[in-house]
Length: 104
Image 1 (cartoon, one colour):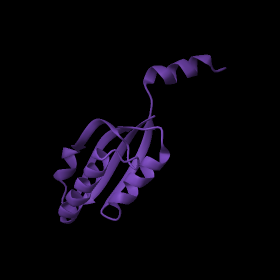
Image 2: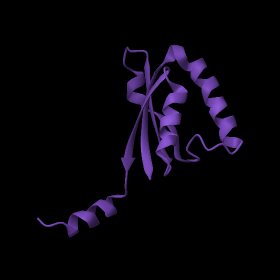
Image 3: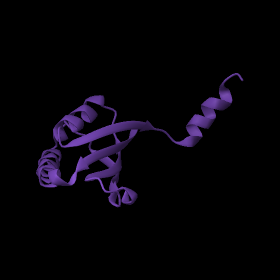
């Protein structure tokens, strides 16, 4: 299944997050099964958020995994420096096909 991941963090925690990201990438390279392997859409920053007066950074990316534990491990790896939410996503055509088969 594919997941849209939204993350929010503070600029002050950027160095800590960078270290954790490096650890995650090293572990994933070692063929660990703790984190999602497939990142379909790399991290992007929501630019509109940068112009607010807050110190928050908001970003998003897309994962693919069939193992819910991967998402939990990912979330816990970056806690308490990032608040990460995962939203399952599916192609619109699949939702439309299901909708067409339902009784209305």
